[in-house]
Length: 435
Image (cartoon, rainbow, N blue to C red; front, side):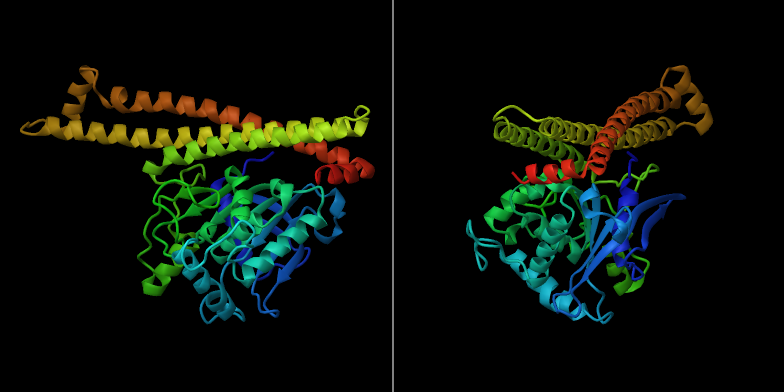
């Protein structure tokens, strides 16, 4: 399985604004010279004419040529708001959805918009139509896992749609990457909140606090929010003019990445971010294994058939493989960011020491560095060697994470090959996953 970088995932999400998307068009991105093909557009739901305003794009390996029951992985893009005074539905997006949702988020669940256990939530029409769209897509592809990408209003659509899935359908969301959208958690019913919390560790919800659209989040952590919130270490856009600055900031313009395409997060939020990821990934694994035990009991009467045994073994392997790969990848990313911060701190400390040594001295910088090196306190000892040791640890963690991600991909491909070769088995898998 090919590892997709944060920078590439942002590019995938940005494809929702590609006005050339149409059925069977290839969806691909190119980042830093690397081309990544996502698939072909198999269907588009456009609510412009109906007045709901949503745009939802479904991408499968071969577009409309695919047999829906054989498709194992689907990508869904939820498009964000149309810019002011542009396009046919900007009024629908802003007046009927963005502004009302902002009011409901600010109001909170216990004031103007109370929820109950059975309440369907306080989403606007577009959010509710988007929720139904996702249900329909899952029904169309009964054996597939789903990757969700969304931005801005599209993020709200995606948050609400995932939360509104019924039963164990929510567990078919393999991963979601959503950006710069308001936090809809407080507008959801308790049922919806419980549902979306079941996959909290699979939802990467990135927020730029310099972008005013991403409202309703705490400065750190992921409590009372959809998914694990990544607090982006962004730059403030200041060179585009007043309107341009706001727009560019919102459209990922302040995002910063390291040389490997990892999105940089605020340093003081890193520990909480990765702790949340570990906690919820393990929680989801526990729930998946408990659900599998329920399925085992339901199928155990009279012994397991060959197909039932294949199903139970594959579901267990998929659950464990995904959880271990996610935890390893998160750990490697945390080490990488910690290494980068530590290297910068070491360099800063050395520069401070060098400046202090120069005070009141007539020696040149090179002469002072030579003296420090003789005393075992030179740049090599203070900065380079520790940084290299840390890099070695990061490299080891990345190798382990890469190996586990490849194994996860091999498991997925093996299951997909079995289902593609045996349509009866594929239908049985679909039935058993609904138990």
